Length: 305
Length: 107
Image: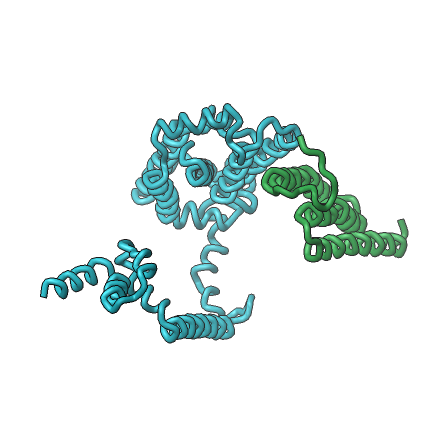
């Protein structure tokens, strides 16, 4: 009686493996069988059984293949039912896009209609998107950020040359980076500042600037980049950009709702200060995106800034 | 420049560039050693791209577009040898028998 309850208890604790091994030992199996008694992994028992028997494995494979085939055929069917590109009867070609194309320049003063849509007509939505980026970095920081002792060992390992993944004193890399990094950063700034008059804007320009910063980190190493890009910079730039965006948008909504004349005039469409506050909003969005890209990269790479 | 001479020049440059790119493709897929594959790939990234860009400039004439082509070429010429250098450094550091294909000077 006692042995049965023990057996049941071990079955509950250790899954079916323990039961099998005990039964084998009771039946007088050789002693070597008892050696690999595994007390771990009670949570994987269902999968374990499926992988153990031949039929289960076969079923597992077949269901996976069937599921994949069903998904692929569903997606291909959807694609084949889509309207042709540029067809006038497509669903997306309705009065909303016509309204934007007709009144975009007149309403906002920005020649780039995409920017006028995402920052003016749907500016509140873009505010949410920027916050999503910020929250993503916060979540990654909670999960992956190092303690201060880890950080000091990381820096000392880099200084001693123990860090094999990092380039140390690489002449080719340094010479290339001296040309490439300023070019990339300048191009990103150009995209952001010209967001209201040419293709581009805060998101794409911020992504370019973030890529340039990541390149700087990869070339010149961890201590060089943490001189100017650390947690303080990230906090200051991201938070101030998001709060400024909020403030500008609040002012915009208050003025628009009450019919007041805004300080930010529409200007001459095509000049760099046209489009009211779109230029400033582009700068804020670009700052948030650049910081987010850099922070995600460096947190996943080293666990710190 | 007469139009047909320009067209012939464009064809020659484009064909040369495409032949080089084909060699790069062949080398990347057929060579057995990482450094050899890298060598083949960097042929297409440098000389092949140069010839194709030059062909495009010849085709479109000297204008703003050719300046953009020049920028693309400059950027590729800076960054592609950098990445090749890093990959070869990684192979050199991690491969224990790096000198089995050709003698390599070890520090």
